[in-house]
Image (cartoon, rainbow, N blue to C red; front, side, top):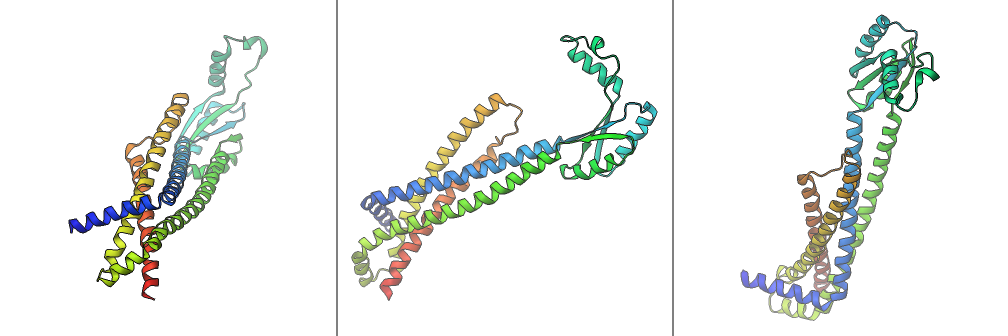
Length: 296
């Protein structure tokens, strides 16, 4: 068994050397397709993580008329709190809001000399359990008579979600096309080697070699091509992603980018096994076609 495996591996490396240029093209194509796949996957996951983080902290702001009494404002707060989907309601009176505003800007400008009357309204900061419920909650709050205006960034979230969906669909189509093109290149690369050794294969078949014995050197050749491509793309993606993320987090430390080691290792492992699978399937298909033609 070990002698047969050694024979298969030696023959596989010999075949790669014989068709060095085509093997290089196949490896380069696997590297490009897997790197693009990894970048696409990390992009979608990071965008989803950012949207999820924003959504979890999504607040809705409601402004009521300035002449509303504090007692009535308390009644409105209870009414908003009882709406479906509302998690928390914080009330800021117009006096408190005006004092906070003056504390922030009085060092630059004496507002009492410019503005004689408090222009700010009472404000409700509303925390919603789910970002998808924002439009409905906003509609319910807007229907309250004393509410003057309701603001939230729900439209921005929906636009980002639409962008993620478009990236996911487009990226998936691109990865499928690249994978198919890569598989064809691997198949044709190994098939050239198989055709070059067609006479040797014919002789091996005459002396009693089984199909599996003939196939394994070429399948191992495909696996070697796939492993080299997978490992190279893995290293490229890992090093480039870590460098980019470190730069971004230095400038924007609050941005919730994916840095979870377990998740990143799962993505890198997917790339490695994806490259190995592409090479193995390519080798199997190429030699199977030639053996099928031999039988005919």
